[in-house]
Length: 441
Ligand code: PMP
Image (tube, rainbow, N blue to C red):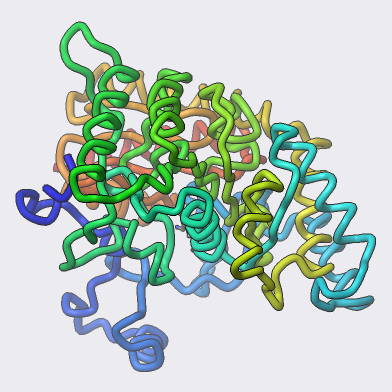
């Protein structure tokens, strides 16, 4: 457990390195736009694929590249109700033409949205704070937990990614290239394996006990367990539903808060429930959310209990200039409406099960597929080696399908189709995976 990633695991991969373009390995096929990007964005430039793609437009599940090639976007966890969904486009265009101001003014569009969003949470989480990024939401969540507990101890999973602020980078082992985890942070293994005869729930609870004891040994009071409810960067561990319960009970018994990071699994993607935590039958103290919330309009936020927010605001208070403005609220409301009217949670459940069935059929004939995991349209396909995963991702790209990588070693294919995707698209994906695996050594 804990900081072993930085000592023992030479093969562990940092999240930004997965499926990333390596500028040092570029060929003599000079792409002028690529050179411009590298010159403009410098060392912080992060591009996908061995040969980055120039995208010019998108609609539904499909992206169109500058050379006319169309790509099935099964990596997409932001434009979750489909690229350029007409209802979101209309809501944003209409609102930005009418009014866009900060939340220091009253505005009905904003409160209508806050109420619609709150209706999706357990009733105790009756306050919502809107931000512009998932990182900001997690940053605020951790500060709320620090104020509530009087401590600074944080538990995360060992390949977690929660964002890019100073506080949150320090609790994101997967974001670190060279540093060790700070003294107040302890990482537990992803809920991947159980002892023979044991259960994932037991194994995860045992890791939690050790982590709480380790923080105590280091003299830290537990502030929070921050947990991505689908363990996306850890490699996608969805089941069995309910395995989080015992671990969360321990966090609460130790005086810590449970922060559910729903940036990846939230907004109906898992098919079983609107939120990832709900699949486990647990109630968080704080829920953070982002990515699909505005279908690409930059918005994020958290929901929490009023007592926790009051405690935090006694010392600090919170205001976010762009967070929760009426255009964001209009985008967010359109997303909620589309999920409901197009029954996208049900579609996620159905298409996700279909994709997993198809890939399990492939696995029965190809032992290089080690495991097929996930819930709804959040799917992990674990392959036997990271270099094979990289070959498959780039091979699928050549065949017009986009996915990504996850997991400690980067050997799990990360598949997140739009919630609107169809059975035909699911079959096309499975056919292309089959072809690509046959062509890959
Ligand atoms: N939490 C999780 C689980 C994430 O995957 C991410 C982004 N990849 C974040 C938080 C941070 O969100 P943002 O990039 O919007 O700051």
